[in-house]
Length: 169
Figure 1 (cartoon, helix red, strand yellow):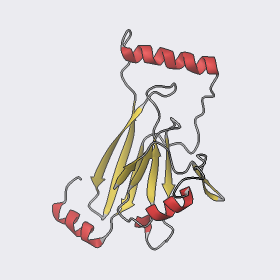
Figure 2: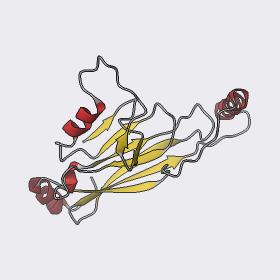
Figure 3: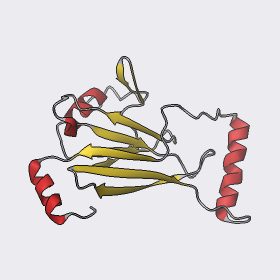
Figure 4: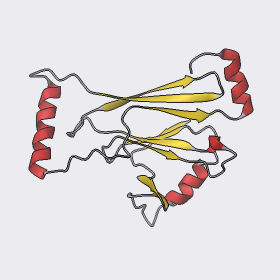
């Protein structure tokens, strides 16, 4: 299972644990902490994909149980085609590795920008907006661009099914 949502659940992991920049509304039916706890009950959840901040990051949401790593999942944020930098999009490829693990390959793609094309016009607007608003260009050390994210398969029934097929998902 992969969930695509506009807003990320967490922003970073530090000594204090997971922290969220996105303050959830006091009227929300569930807190971000409760949401993560609920999501960690689904061993088939592989990733939470989001945008909103227009940054490229990959954050592991670790399992609360060290004996059940399959309860962890990845949060993958993606940049925007609208803003500079980087004006990229991501592709995802899910592959069965044959050893009871699945890899999600996430690759950022730069669009081809030919002179006079709509992409070139978009890039010129994005650069101008970045210069006008003097937005800082940060390359965060926690940011990930291209990544292979590996997950343990569970339940055993899923492992058996995939071992029999022995092919990419």
